[in-house]
Image (tube, rainbow, N blue to C red; front, side):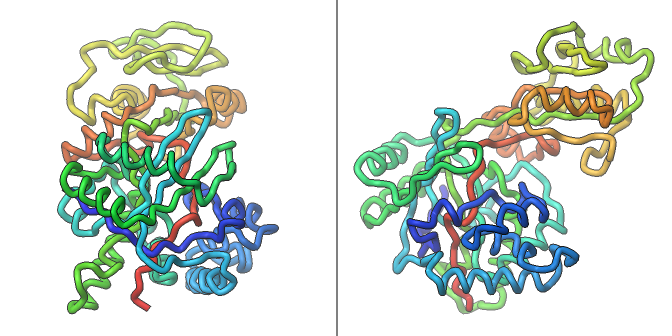
Length: 412
């Protein structure tokens, strides 16, 4: 079973919550962050992507960027744009998008649980991305962005969440990017905090990373480093935990993560598809069910339906993104490593089918494929099997905003 750990949250002054909170660092490039933060001194981007306060010619991985992040965090605390709690608490974070609500518990989770595979992953990470966040965490002496975790929902936990929301006013309530409403409640009742801890310790065997694998690896490696340099420290020291928001899987939605290719199309392309798929012309590119795909080529949509003999019961090989990769991209176009091959790119489903049409019609890309979304059960099955999903298998919306919560590691 898993541990949740109350913490002395660092969070915005209530009147500044909508000005501080911003999109996460990894969905913005430096130019986008600079534009978004330039007229807003309260924006958390001054901490999360501190290069926006330095010359544009400077690399975002320069030593000065991490130093500036630490300085800006200290400044935000000094000006009380961010304020630290006096005692350890838990929080609730609700996001509402297009009428659909999801509510997570904001807490800290255990590095030991991650090491013991009680916090399960489904993606590989890239060392250079880990190093960036490791340096950012060390410069700020804080977990500066939460990890997006999920679990198989438990009735007792859900009842406590529902009752707290019903009987208390949110500390923050605002609408921000993409018309998503964000609400935060502070759980400051020791009895309720203890009940939530007990339910996770007794009823939740595992947590799963939904989004934030690089942040997780970075936080864990920083914590392990501090543990080695502080061998006398108690297991309850803050660096043994990392900042997380934990949602029941039943409330989450994965959007499709679509693909575009820039490849020459063989004259016998449809003949090459025929052994694995039935192909029909259609008016729309959005797949209606699993194991079917949209394909946009020469201003025409097609539906590709996987034939039975290519389906698999393996939790990874049976994924729709794997079927497309194995039986189209690799077999026909020799695209084997989608992380490095410049002939393929990925388009989040929130941008819709028209974005795929636009990309192909612009002649920047040759053909587009739309994919039926991976399910939460698929994600948990892969993680439970100790396997890894293909890159770009999941696209979660809405995004957790950054700047609403920081976790002080208390090493300085």
